[in-house]
Image (tube, rainbow, N blue to C red; front, side, top):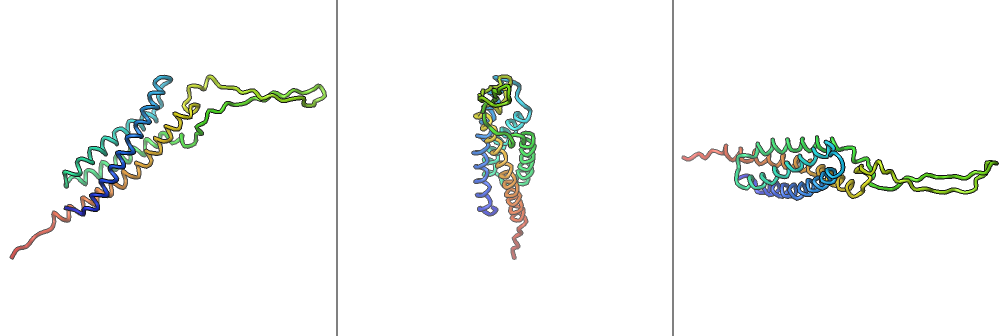
Amino acid sequence: MADDGTYNAHTVIRVLQVLTLIPAWALMAAIIDWYNNKVKTPGGVMALFIITLIASVWAFCILLAVLRARNTALWITFWDLVAMGALIAAVATTANIANYECTAAPTTSETVYITPEGQRISRQNIAILNDEDDEELWNHPDYCNLLKAAWGLAIANIIMFFVTAILAGVIWKQNKDLQRAVVVEE
């Protein structure tokens, strides 16, 4: 059997993947539910939801399979890289959320009263709430923050899928070297 340290590291990181992917797609499901009640869900949000859901199923299945099989490490490496690429694509489609401020502050309008001579008498601030923009996700700080959290978890999982792909490659190499070992008897 290959080095137990590599197997243990692979298992620990795979458990972390499962523990971070489940909240990521759960957050996305809450956002999609909000969108379904209001407006059409954007494609980037749907892509991130679907890919995090598929990646969590993949990570969980491999967590179970790697404990049983020694010879599948090369396939695990390949599909981990595919999952990493899919997550990169999903994060890229929703990359604009990094620039949004998740606040619902009303805009203000200022009314200034001026005398006929051009002198200011008084100012009055009037709060204006934009009803036509009420359907936007960015005007609801809770949902905006949920989307940013899911986005951050997806970025963390990109890194973890890369690490597990490397570890699976190391496991494959170690198993290959063990299978090549030839015992010569005299």
